[in-house]
Length: 378
Ligand SMILES: *Cc1c(COP(=O)(O)O)cnc(C)c1O
Image (cartoon, rainbow, N blue to C red; front, side):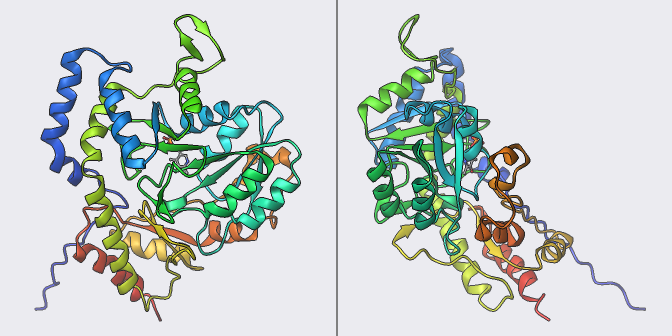
């Protein structure tokens, strides 16, 4: 009699936060207890300490906490003086919030296609978009998946027209462009601490960075209804603060961030090695010096659905970032874009697939995922 071999199937989700939590559980509980015992939940010492530490980490003069990455973008645009009818140039290939924040202020997103190597806004296309936008006020560059956009030409384009250059660094904390940290290259940097980001809160959170004291003061006012003096409102702001509880958790996690980032980079290197012969396109290095922090490791394949299904049936989680480019979103149909306008973004939307890359993956895990992709070659 032949017995079936017992195969215990591996399970590798796209992201697993449990292992990380178990490593820092005691530190986090102590920090959270400290805040609860203080009964000081709004602004205050815990947030100020975090803002100082993260400004140092991002090598910026100032950091201002807020309630989410989306709010960070909205506050940045408000601080940039964006008003209804203004135009804001940005990428057609990002998470929705990048464009949603622009529309929230009554401004008009003007999209530009991305570079096929970096998946970030193509400076040549950005310059063309600026040229056809008489009411352009700001430019938002996104550092997608943890890799920096090409900031030098973007700074030049923004400088020429007097646009405020905003970095959407939600996926890119600690990333660098030619030795400079994300968030400190343009005038304002926007970060998110959503659970899927490299530095994640135990809930929602966001933050802004800037080198400019005046912008920092304005952001601090805008997050508390535009008030600089109690009950006096210089601007119409919003209520968007980073909770003291989240700040306390983030202070603990920030101390581990570099070690976690190095693990992500190591995982990416191992994928590059093990997938060298797999029938998929691998992430390629940017043609300029960067420190990529691999919030995502994204491959390209024309057989995406089949590959996803194959991975899922072997216990491996994957995700599609992003299946619909921004210019084709139904809510922006009145802007008049159509299919074919931004061919690179549209191709990426059909072909990209994110693999698990979180720091706690083992070499065995990466080998297992890579094996599944390689064996599909027929
Ligand atoms: C996550 C993300 C945001 C929004 O951050 P939230 O904290 O979820 O509001 C904005 N832009 C990009 C590129 C993101 O990845």
